[in-house]
Length: 277
Image (tube, rainbow, N blue to C red; front, top):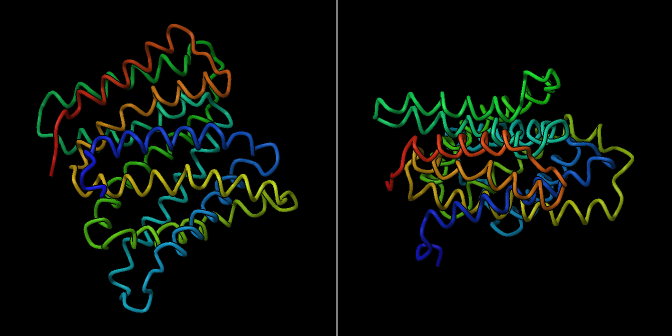
């Protein structure tokens, strides 16, 4: 059924779900902290994938499982660091910094010499968003967002590999439980003592928005798009994140920050404008 849906539409729907889930996750921070929220979301997502997919664990060899396990570890790192970043930075700013990861994938995979222009443009946009000249930039938040960027770049490459080698959603039924297990190290201590029935219910709802819907759609999209084209579509992430930040979190950007978002989006679109596999 999803084969009839354009790959770009799958990716854009995933973007909307990711950023909505990220914005709503901030409402759990006071109860369980950002790492706790990331862990509970991944744990609920893992349960959903395992129940829905029923992965045939015994039929896979260690060699086959190595990359999905690595993807799970990368997913945990990316998720925890991103939520730590949006605790300290406006959602649109954190996503713009994190987007440097997909942009890097698009530039590396592009064969055009003009590709060198786009990282410069994106860096200018991120500079406008963080406004370091005001001396108020949260360097820890930027570091978390930068680490999430590296995780996101790796996630794109590894997800395409897993999607090509595991049928259906079996790859996600491996990676998300691994991610949940890895995130337990930092998530459980932060959430301990605050896991109420309401928090659990909220975590399940958030898990549907992120990771269940977007990771599923991204896996399907990456089976039909090059990593360069997918990285380009992800250029919409900062703009969507800024929009959700305004609507849900009251994070209204100033004119310079709006220009910064526009520069990052332009850099992503310019990095690679086509790329069906």
